Amino acid sequence: MLFQDFKNATYYYRTLILILMFTSSLLAHATEPPLLLLTETSPFTLKSPASIHSGEATTFVESLLEHADQNYQLSYQPWKRAYLNAQTKPNALIYPIARAPSREDQFYWVGQLIPVTYYLFRVSNRNHIKIESLDDAKNWRVGVVNEHIHHQYLKSQGFKNLQSVNSNYQNIKKALLGRIDLFPMSAGGMMQLCSRDELDCSSFKPVLQLNAVAKGLYLAASRNTDPFIIDQLKDSYQVLVNNGQHKKILRQRLLRIEAFNQHWSTEFEVLDSD
Image (cartoon, rainbow, N blue to C red; front, side):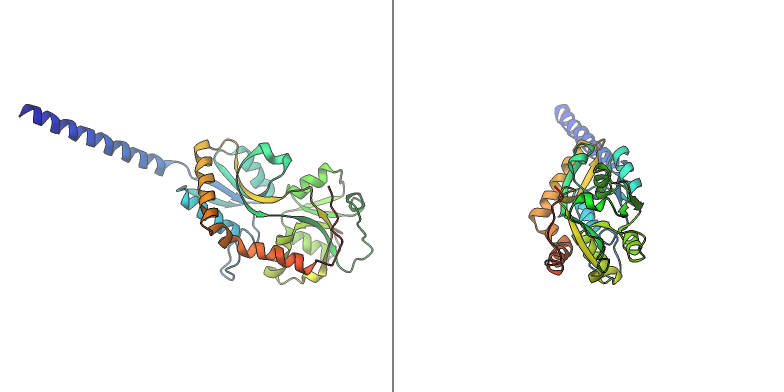
């Protein structure tokens, strides 16, 4: 009888310990500070009730975090501030960030959102602006988005006459007003801005392809992010790629890249800045 009571008591206490351990784990997860999710305000990141084809990057990243069972706090910031916070804050994520050799060791790279190609654009009717090389572009006023990869790249190539703003849309407006002569933008970014803001894409002409800038836009994490979280995010990213959610959510942006190639396929000779 005593032996049976001892066995029952042992079983009871073991069960109680397991329940307490499980509860503690849940409470610890619930009280962990949320991941800081950083991005800028753009058609690719900002969801709009007026369009189902907006904010695709945010939709995908939020799906990934949900799959990885991660709490997060989304913060829209000017890119320069978001970029600095992503380098200094613990457990911080940033998207969509261009991956380039100059940034490779500054972040953990979770996964690619979309491929990207950058171009220098001018207003179509400003035919006196003739660009046949990157050096030619140094003679003109160039609008850039503060600390975007193209800003960093052009600075590294010796550009001095750069005017920085907080968004691509500001550069488009400045170009139309004659306040800048050239501005860099991605193919998909240009098509999405034209679509969202009802701009006439034929008002602009790509004059130089910047192949040396970057090849893809990514979700990345600060270097002082918990490695266990990085592994979870990478695993969830691969699941969403394999089950087709990645392609489904980002399909519209990929179609815009195709539309760019069709719209400007004969507009200019592809000039490789490499």
